[in-house]
Image (cartoon, rainbow, N blue to C red):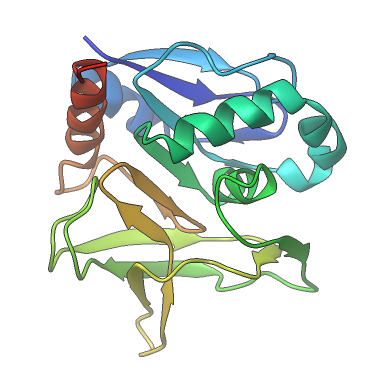
Length: 197
């Protein structure tokens, strides 16, 4: 059985309960940790960092050098990772992903959208359309370009990091829909758990 570490503290607290339930139902154990207080990422086979307010805790998060290094090392080494909104910002803040985050004067790209997957990745198969939601007052100089976001009014833009071991971007996903997103995440984490060292 694989273990997925979930960031949960004052900086990261926006999760759909359905997502956590779906991860457990797919066969993974969940262990919670605090990027603010813990010295390093727990031993795990997957990482889930949800939304929250990392910008309000930036000084403390970045002073926790051990955790920043642990996250950066794990993600760049291929630990299966889902990072949404604030979690995506945190990966940028720790230099696990490129770019810089910065405040804006209003909510950016607010509301429901559809993610179109043009290639296979850890969570998505080529051609799939995934419902999502986006809400944030900060932005990033490099939001990625692996996925296509579509709004009902016809607007589109590229965003995100979607590879064999990662989904990272501002949109929040719901694991309780028609697509087996939790099962795919757990499958990748199982593979990481059973990798040859």
